[in-house]
Image (cartoon, rainbow, N blue to C red; front, side):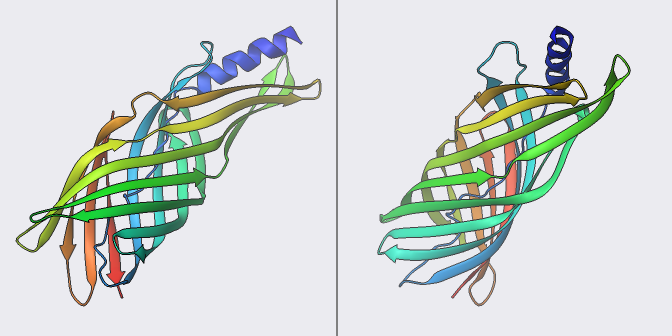
Length: 244
């Protein structure tokens, strides 16, 4: 049993250089008026470094890509609501951790205040992700054993204060950003002698950063939104939206 526990600890250590890239443009991708609505499709990618709450576990650096659909609606004058649904993968090539695209959802709320030369928006967005699993087969003292790593209970939030102005037909925006991330990781070893598991929680190392972007009008209510976010790593994405 002690040998199995030691092997489990080694297994967890070898897995723990992972990376999450999640991805989500903030909801301030359109400027709605007179109770308009909007639908869109988006893509975003970033890296997040996370710390374990147990000293025996190494810190993680997750890498993830998101593809999503979004619906955006005015609740009342100056207050907008949006919901997002899509798929996100999870991988770390250096540590041979890969899981395919799985569903995720996000909801957001923003409030606008209009001034003479700019608009100020306060925004809050929350996202929840699926459980990601990666497994390896090996032997312990000639006994076939499966090692499993799970990343679950993974969520993120975006809280931002965004100033926006128009410049030559383009909408330019930016402002401070607060982005906490949390996840739970479980390592499991299984063979004919039984199973062992160990679990720890992770949270993002750097939560404070900035968001910046530009919205480009196309034709007949269509626009493209390009956005960057920076906390500890630079992230970027693009979205296509239709106002109706």
